[in-house]
Length: 67
Image 1 (cartoon, rainbow, N blue to C red):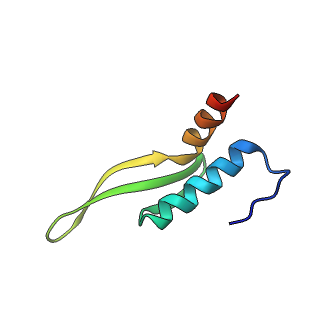
Image 2 (cartoon, helix red, strand yellow):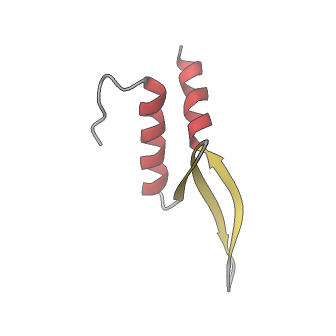
């Protein structure tokens, strides 16, 4: 994935997180407040939602840590 150089660093980090989580097989959903990676446990007959990881918040936290 090639990201524009003028894109804010936090947005680039978020785009890369979305790409990597999808590549690892997570379902990534978009909501009003950002992107989430779904952590799901597969049972014999159903999928159980374990957590939603807020990728938008994670990207902002990484960006703050890099400053």
